[in-house]
Image 1 (cartoon, rainbow over the protein chains, first blue to last red):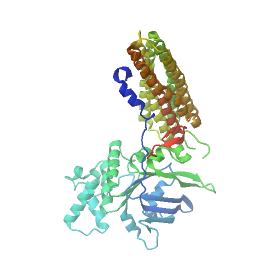
Image 2 (cartoon, rainbow over the protein chains, first blue to last red):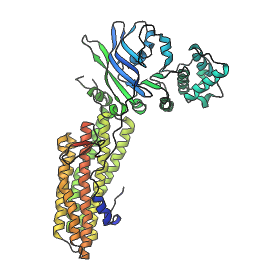
Image 3 (cartoon, each protein chain N blue to C red):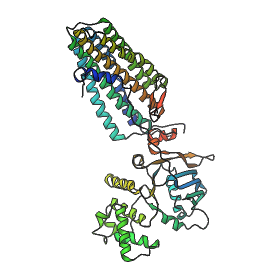
Image 4 (cartoon, rainbow over the protein chains, first blue to last red):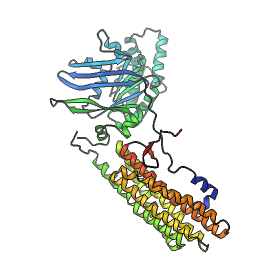
Length: 296
Length: 235
């Protein structure tokens, strides 16, 4: 506890100089919001499972080399939105997406677009680490091969190393590349899945609650990795952990469940703001209620 | 969403308790300002000693609040208006602690000035500053408690006369420069004036924080109490 005694510490000159200073000091600075062109843009996107409309009228622009987070309560449609961004929802028989999803300006739902090619350029990492039942090396090499890699053996070795370095796993596994992917810890398996995703050279990575099955240390490593990856990739992450969204993302989209005209529960985008804004002074009351734990 | 349910009820109860504890310091702060001014203008050393003792109480509360605040933050990691409220409580806690220290600074001047000649006009002026500053502290806190931005905006206007009196103290001090003992006394009183002026500034700061809580915009008040965003520079 300091108790500065002005009488003993300050000369009269200091006091007079102090008196000429402006009164209350400035505190803090407003963060500068940098708008960057969107790598993926949705326009009036609606996703149905059969007759049930899961999300309605989503128009969003995800920034290049940014981390964008999707948050909201269970059933708000955030994972559905994520899976629509690389046509992963096509694998659900009853799923149907209306509206447009533009990737570098081209609609990925346009006729003639190959969904497999879409998923190669827009990679995905899932909630539970899901390595193939193969060696660490093959986990990456196999994925690259089925996605059309035609290089030599040493090119493949380079690719595997590059992917593992990129996923911050190389140092831990470089001496056991032939061991099973399952021999790794949960956090390492998830980084292996990230390595597998980036080996196909996407420029967008979708992450669906990538840390929810991991302990706090492994979570921290993935979060640090995400911050490194955004130098080269654009990342869109669904998370239940608001603090995680606050820590890693540049922009956050909050979705909520709304009752529509016929009483059906449909997910809707409530607010999409710079993350700092959304978690300190959100524009919408629904967002404020959700992040402070008040919702009905 | 009309019928809002608080699922964070335990955190909000703890936050309310913490807020009550911080706000309980306002009465002590006002009391200390009054006593310190009395002590320094009347050379009352006994009163000065009581100011120092009261500061011990404020310091104790300051430590307790700090610990409870840290615990709340670690356990709940609040966001939105909860985060803004937490931020302000930490700042207010430090403000009261600093106000207590300023009062001790003023009270200690009574010890240095014992036996020196005095100018009653200067004593009057210090008393007037005390009478102006105490309502500022009260008004700033009331604006916070009521969430009343119009009340918070009153603070810059309330601070003007304090600043003016503080500037005038310098002239008063220069005026007695030919009498070395009076000059010594008046120089010390200038320090007391400066401490009161700082307390006034802290009240203005706090009113700005209150505006931030209400609006979510961090801004400084201009002379009319209108918010000026911190990124608007006067080029």
